[in-house]
Length: 345
Image 1 (cartoon, rainbow, N blue to C red):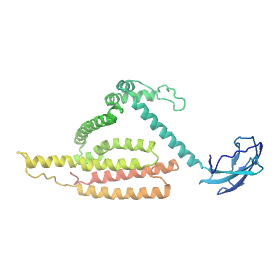
Image 2 (spheres, rainbow, N blue to C red):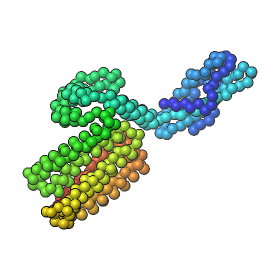
Image 3 (tube, one colour):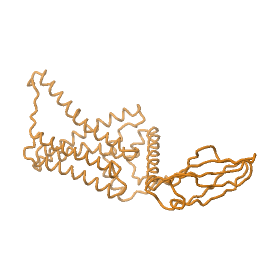
Image 4 (cartoon, rainbow, N blue to C red):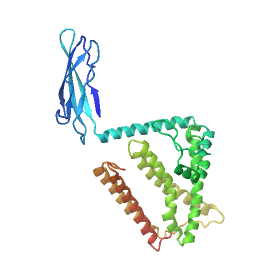
């Protein structure tokens, strides 16, 4: 892809003349990285000089640039010279720009769509079987067998979450708090289901929390981070979301219940005066988590220095290897934490 940046005023000529095109300077070398096919142009009086053709010889791993010098005669017999800087973008840069523009376009379309959304549209969409829309043509795609299976599989959840008010109401605050209430409600339900499952298979509450409850509470953050990666230019929002989510779990998810318990035992007639929770085997799980977290930080630093990306990579192999390494760390942590016989919170 060629990207031209004009360094001064447009190359125009006062009379009909011939415009000479030569390579002036740049990091790209003529005959090696590109070939200038147009040496002279016929410029009309008062018209812009256009139609310079350049052939790229080979794709490069880095951006290269060169400067074209365009010379035309003026009415007074002098020579008017203009310069155009041309940048050769590699495939990676071009694909990155296309992805960035596509994500921004999707975000703007989503904002405009949700701004005009009505309550009835949410239920209509939840109860309608569709195969989606083609992004290029904008036409609706016929539903496939897989679309029908996933539709009936998710129908209960789609109808339930259709009760969430549209994002355009009250600046989105109403939808946010309704979502928080639904997440809290289903987190409590899934927690009880996980305890019953652990009792049925012979797992302790601590092992059930490490292996199953933690996954259920982290899945919403996983999907939010995925959307942040898709719609943002970098991984900053996704990383901040994951760290903030864990901070909320620790400081609010544990802090508020402990505060309520401490106040109750301090002031209630039936309280014990002091609210104390034995640590049990929590120390081993915390130390193990800190070790795994340090490994993840070092792994991300390595990826940023070698791969050049916090997530994904220049090839699918780099993406799969990075994902497999992090999943393996989670499996190791869960296995070791659950495998200690003294684990009890």
